[in-house]
Length: 434
Image (cartoon, rainbow, N blue to C red):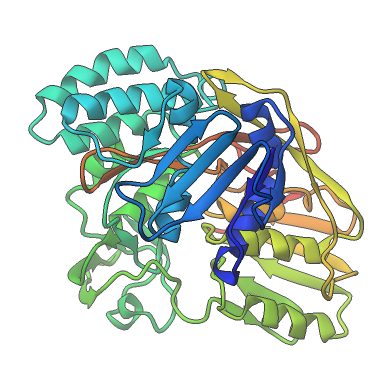
């Protein structure tokens, strides 16, 4: 079957994502799949179309040998790829529409997680028991959104969660629950006098903690991240160890403070987040020109971002075609066999000397996709703490207007068969940064 993805630069990043997902699609469709950018006009194919004249919500549908993903805009059409598990589960045309009421919300959470969430056994979750407990609580709650969040947080997966839209975004700080562990010099909180060890004024700490899921070693930092998140500008307050108090006003942007990428002449490079067009590739070009025997790449606190950029950067450190590891995904509650993940060295300028990567519990998501396959190579050393434990490629499911459900779809394994989910990418040298 041909997967026909639109031509044009605005579609290229997702074409790369789909190219990496062909083995997954082949298993789901039970047929070989190749990615093409022009419609052959005949034969078995999955035709992805942006049609401004499309009448109605984006749809994933099938008519014989023709599968169609259709939306009025790029993002609408792309949403249909999150619908494909629903489509496989129901066997019916599937539309990107909100739930009509709270009962349908409960049913969607129940069915979509049961069908496609891959880590029930890994995390020792009894989903039926959780549903039996939480479904009636949601329907009877004064704040059903909060109960939905608490329900899904029981999975212990930072990627699998119920969110509001617009989604709160984070301040550029790191905290263990409400205790600051990193306050960048020059930031708004720094200017107000806040330093590592100060405690955020957070009367909702326990409520947020109940509604936050993550791997055990990552959880306190994910709680801190959520406490330091908002949708608009507001006043924040923190207390020092000797009774000091500081207040400041700040609007969260979800971006790190300062430059996304920085480097020094001694061979130290820091990437704070995988942000396209933020100078990451250009910084690598400059660093690779230097006469160093070793490069130190600091990914501490890098919670992810653009996975295409992360994996393209990874390929600049490969020396030959490499089996990175494998993935398993869940269809109808059952895990597939291991599907190998293979990468080839970049065609661009590559680093051919030693690489040291610094990681912590907030090295997460796309950063783990970067690490996977590099960790364990002879020329790579990973120092610090295991990464966050979540490279699960989440899908997005609509609930009520302004509510969405994110669901992880894969378990990722390194080349030695170690599962990244819930435990993180292993380190070569353990080091506590705090």
